[in-house]
Length: 109
Image 1 (tube, rainbow, N blue to C red):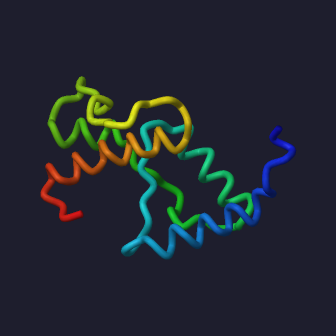
Image 2: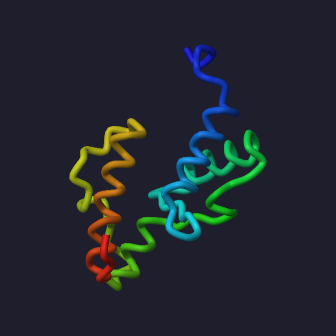
């Protein structure tokens, strides 16, 4: 099944262009785990020779803990979309959580 996927080079090039066209300033990669970041980071560097996010990402869980000032609490209850491990569902849920965090910080979205 994976052999039928599109070649990663053009796909990652389009992704990189999309990120750059939507970023206001420097793009920031926010994820709920290191695996997501490492996957995207490696693919961008390997197949485009560049990465619009640079070399670092931000952990959603750490951002939430800092916002509420509690190192034990978990952000996952902020997701509205069920976490199914389908990339789109998981990205939506994480975006919902990030939106809540940013709103609580007084960010205009």
